[in-house]
Length: 47
Figure (cartoon, rainbow, N blue to C red):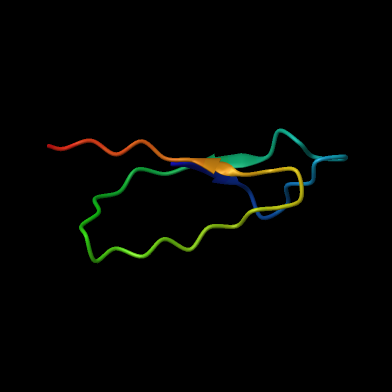
């Protein structure tokens, strides 16, 4: 999961992001930080 870092800012710190790996189920809830002009990308694969 690639997501905006807490200090991300599209004007002053646009390259601030975090990368996380985690196991998820159909019950998992994700809390993601998204800033103006930012976003996140998630790749889910079965193991």
